Amino acid sequence: MIDHFYSAGILVHFALLFYAAGFLIRDELWLRTLVLVGTFFYIAYYYFVSAVPLWDAILASSILALVNMVLIGVIIRERTLLAMSSHEAGLYSVFCTLTPGQFRRLLRHGCWRTAAKPEVLTEIEKPVNCLYYVVSGEIDLEMDSGAGTLDGEKFIGEIAFILGTNASATVTARPGAVYVEWDVTDIRRMMKRSLAFENAMIALFNVDMARKVATSNNDKDRISGEPQTSLKRLANASTMSRKQEYAIKRV
Image (cartoon, rainbow, N blue to C red; front, side, top):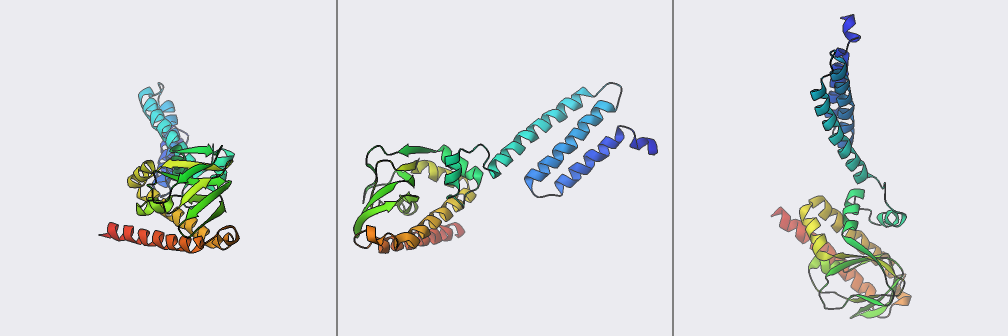
């Protein structure tokens, strides 16, 4: 019995220990990490158990370990800001409802742009084909209830995107404004594929709308008319839209 603890057989027990511990944990990253360690013990066992290493078993286990390591890397990338540029990481701090992985997938479909001249993003009562997020700079806003200038850090076109309607305002990015542009078709496709991503985007739009309503009073000196009231109406429309979507899903 004592000799067994000094033989290659003890490696199988260590492998079993790590496998069992991994399968008892619900977190996928820890599960895969523990199973990977167990696989290394199995590889060591196959190497030392006989005078001639069991190369077929070693090769099979090594392939499984490699696949597991790749997926561990994918999970780490999904959960962290590793390999993000400074401006991407800065933008992620605003997209607080998305996971890093969801944010990366969203950015893959977006285009960073800097306005060299006044760029019309949306036109009132016209279809919205792109969704925008103004990272920095100023935008000119024209609505039925008024017009004026606003700072960036806002979504543009999200209400039309949520409700499937035409633009409620004409928005023009001033020269030097930095914004990200997405084709609405790409975002709808991503939302259709993943309920988690859809819920995160709806929550993000509501957070953005809440910020617009909260800051509307600060912008009242820069805006003529009553766009603040319009913003509140749009926020109510956004909330009603989400309730309608959930009601449809429940049916």
